Amino acid sequence: RYEFTLFEAGCTDEIFVNVEDVRLELEADLFFCWEDNEVNLNDYVNRNPGDGILSGPGVMENNDEFYFNPIRSGPGRHPLVLEALNCTDTLWIEVEGDADIPDYQFCERSDALILQADPPGGLWSGPGILDENSGLFDPQSLGVGTFEIFYTSPSGCLTTDTIEVFLFTEV
Image 1: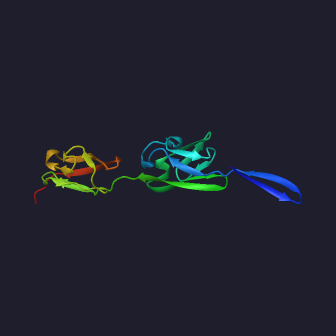
Image 2: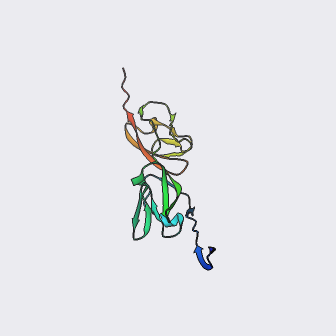
Image 3: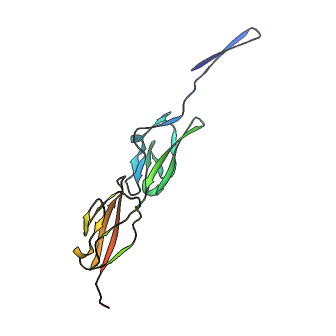
């Protein structure tokens, strides 16, 4: 709060000025998997002043509560903007999409192979996975069919994919 006193022609006047700092402060990381449920942003950020308006991709307001829906925003880096008193402050929300897993097809007699994913370094699970850390997959342990496999990225986001094992045909 600032106080100013003005003197002019024998008159005195005072004016008081309040300066508000418009800012968003993190309470928790703003990182989500794209299939995560909607979250109340009050659990993640503090608004100053508290009556400021939040906006950005995937941000919704309901009864003065602000929510973020990663499915609506989609994967990527998204601004979370606080607007109050004709000023703004911005934080960034990261939403991770599905991991990129190549299309895998194996003959039922194929040798075991280490599966690849981007981002690397996650954990694999599902039928035929021999080592969850390396992604070692053995089609001979399964037989013919289409099998669902799961990859959890290093940040904890789950991607589901399928692997096809087809019948060996002698030529």
